[in-house]
Amino acid sequence: MGLILKIFIPLLGLALAYYFYSAPENFNEEMLRGKRVIVTGASSGIGEQMAYHLARMETHLLLTARTEAKLQKVVERCLELGAASARYVSGSMEDTTFPDVVVKEAENTWGGLDMLILNHIGFSHFNYFNGDVEHVRKLLETNFVSYVAMTVSALPMLKESDGSITVISSMAGRIGTPFIAPYSATKFALEGFFSSLRHEFIIEKVNVSITLCVLGYIDTDSAVRAVSHAVWDTPAPKEECALEIIKSGALRQRELYYPPRLVSNLLLLHAIAPDFLDSLIRNNYKLENIRRT
Ligand SMILES: NC(=O)c1ccc[n+]([C@@H]2O[C@H](COP(=O)([O-])OP(=O)(O)OC[C@H]3O[C@@H](n4cnc5c(N)ncnc54)[C@H](OP(=O)(O)O)[C@@H]3O)[C@@H](O)[C@H]2O)c1
Ligand SMILES: *[C@@H]1O[C@H](CO)[C@@H](O)[C@H](O)[C@H]1NC(C)=O
Image (cartoon, rainbow, N blue to C red):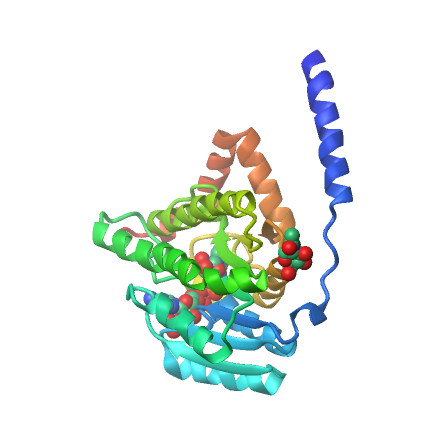
């Protein structure tokens, strides 16, 4: 108890003082007007919603995903909403040459880049791990290695603009949960890689911010289709989630938790009572609805 009083309380005081004195400036939509932004996985879900918010904020947009027909529609809508410009490149991030193709498109069109928003994920089953090693290898390429490759290609432009990188992660990138082992692995990989890279940027005075977004369950069609039969939770709205991601990137925050209360509480519980949290997690599934495939 003495130790807690002597060390913990002053540390807490310091942490609070630091938190309040370094409170970030407020978000203002003007911050983004005219910025050149790449959004990956922008044909549906959270990526599509980010594109619409960014369009309203009058940014220049380069969107990417595999399905050309969907991207065309999203681009049209972005132009209606007020985007300074909007275009797309279609292709698969499973193709190791594609990340560079996307970044080159930005370079050729704009000659620079301000924000890189990495959001896409490849399809993965929600089920017991079935031993498919090849799937894990491919998913790592799509969900993780392509993020690294996009970052490497875009870095010269981002350095020049004092730009930002926003990486969409998940609770599953911080805490293990069942039935998504390959997906979870790719998100842990992102967290490790980009947290390490953030240190190096600071050490080397590279003024490119890295924001990691830790998301809970969001109401996108694909997520609802994959898990609604197996969990009790209600998903949070993708429109608000998309806006919070954009704000956190524009404010150059270290990380975003969304929904904030839920994610903070789970991470705190994970730190102080991991076994207890694990049992809560396992009790949260309707196991009878999950059949081995
Ligand atoms: N929704 C949630 O509950 C939730 C929770 C935590 C974290 N997140 C994270 O939030 C992000 C967005 O999730 P979401 O729910 O919005 O997903 P989504 O609706 O399924 O969107 C995924 C996007 O990635 C694209 N994509 C799929 N395979 C691809 C490939 N091989 N190459 C390039 N693009 C590909 C899809 O378009 P095409 O099919 O046209 O390629 C689509 O635009 C992801 O990083 C996800 O991990 C979501
Ligand atoms: C880093 O970039 C941000 C955003 O452009 C800018 O506000 C800040 O002053 C820059 N910091 C340094 C040290 O150049």
